[in-house]
Amino acid sequence: MLRALEKGADGVCIIGCMEGECQFKTGNLRARKRVEQVQRLLNSIGLDGERAQMYNLSSSDAPLFARYAEEMDERIRGLGPNPMKKKKNAA
Amino acid sequence: MIVADKKPVEEIIEYVKDCRKVLVLGCNECVTVCEAGGKKEAGMLASALRMYYANQGIEDAQVDERTLERQCDHEYLEEIRDIADQYDAIVSIACGVGVQFTAEKYHNTTVYPGVNTCFLGATEQRGLWTERCQACGQCILAYTGGICPVSRCAKRLFNGPCGGSSDGKCEINKELDCAWQLIIDRLKAIDRLDLYEKLFDIKDWSTDRAGGPRKVQREDVQI
Ligand code: SF4
Ligand code: SF4
Image 1: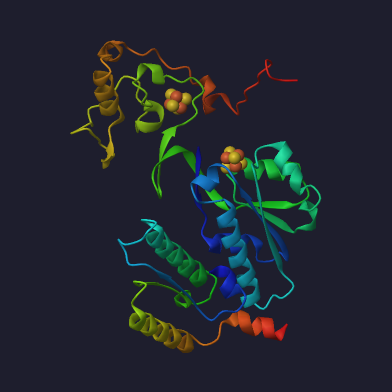
Image 2: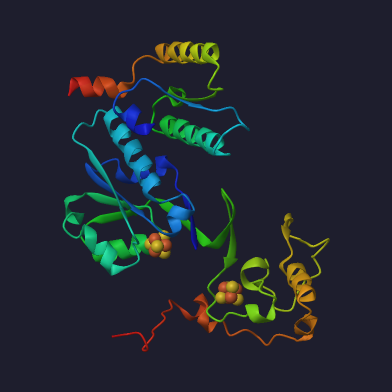
C-alpha cells in the first residue's frame, strides 16, 4: 500500500471478502487493521489518510464492486492528486 | 521475548528531520514477533520517512531499510559494517539492547531508537502482550507454581497476598489478576499447597538491578 502511494498512486483501495467469510479466516480482518495503520501513518506525515481504503465484497457482486470503485474515484478526485506525484514529476 | 511498542512516527521524524541519509534497521527476532520492529515495520517506517521528506520538499533525502537476523549479536551487526558510516543516522527498531549494541559498534554514526522497549513477556493473543519476568537473576518459580510474584505482583510480595486482594483481583486495578491468588490456585491444582505454607527468606536482590549492571559469564562456553 505504502509503496504504491510513495510511487504516486492517488489512492489505494484494498478489497477483501466479506467479514466472516474469508477463506483464510482472519485475513480480511487483518487487512482492515493494516489499512487503518496506513491511514494513521499517512495522517501523521501530513498526507491524507483517506487515500487508503478498505472494502469488503463478495466475489460475485459486480454491481457493488462498481459502486465501491466509483466511491473511491470520487473520494480521490475530491482529495486531488497525491503530492508524491507532483514531487516525482518535478524531479 | 522482549516486548516493544512502536514509537509514534512524529517522534522519529523529530529525531531525523535534519538528516539526509537515514537507515531504518529492523531486527528479525523479538520485535518481529511483537510487530514493532521487524522487516514489515522497517519497510513501513522507511516508506513513511521517504514520503515525509518528499512532502517537505526535501529532494535529496535518502532512506534505506535493512533487517538483520539480530541486533544483539556481533556477527549479524557486522553485516552493515561497510555501509553504516554512509548514513547521517540509523533508526534502530530493535529493542534497547539492539539500539545500544548498534551504537557501540558504529561509534561515529548517530543511532536513534525507533521503538519503546517495554518488558519480558508473552503473546497472550494477537496484539496483546503481557509481562511475565523482570529478569531478577534468581528465579523462584519452582516455589510459586510457575507464577512470578516479582513481575506479576504489583508490590513484588514474596509472602502474599496483601490485604488488597479481592475476588482474585489486585487492588491497583480490578482488571488485573492478583498474582498471589493465581499462585495459590495453581499450587492447589498441582497439590503443592505445602509450598505456600513455607515462608520465603528475604530475597537476595543483588542479582537484580539493585546490584548495578549485570553480566553472565560462562567459562564453560567461552573460548
Ligand atoms: S536485538 Fe533485541 S529484539 Fe533483536 S533479537 Fe536481540 S533481543 Fe531480540
Ligand atoms: S522470579 Fe525472577 S527470573 Fe523468575 S520469572 Fe520472576 S523475575 Fe523472572
